Length: 227
Image 1 (tube, helix red, strand yellow):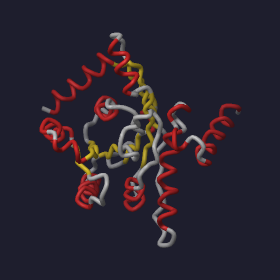
Image 2: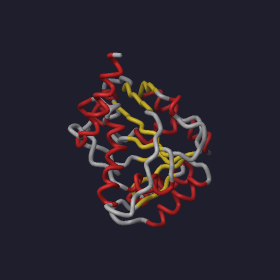
Image 3: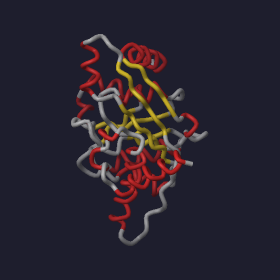
Image 4: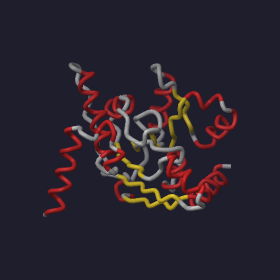
């Protein structure tokens, strides 16, 4: 079934999109890392199965979709973990830690939901907490061009939607200190989100458009381009 679903996902995406993937060389040569990605449209989750050859991955999905019998069935074959977005979900967190310890790759959108205004929202701290606590490598990945508005507009015109996936360099977050943990955790979350935002078009940066850390990344990019 997984082989069929992989073929089906790739066939559909090739039919309706033109996906350009950049940065494969930045993926760690081992399993058990985190891919943190922005979330613009409904096609973002299936693109993980398109872009990665190895399906040793899992994706947290909002608990509301578990009520849909088809998506619940699909989730069994695509390694979904249904997560309560509004309350501490210790069961889901334990399952994520277990799967990561088994070498699976976590693909997660720290925003928690797709950006209906086509701009990044503030990231939630869950992935930063887990990555810091467990010492996991984080690979920031940006998705641009997957906005639902663009997708539906192109479908009406029988055009394929150009989408770009870009992976940045992996990094680790230091262990959380005992003091001032909330502030540091917010800094860690912003670090993840700004590393994604720097790879996005300006129009999609949203909450992080004026963030000082993003400005640092942009200045570094400019300096490198001038040398």
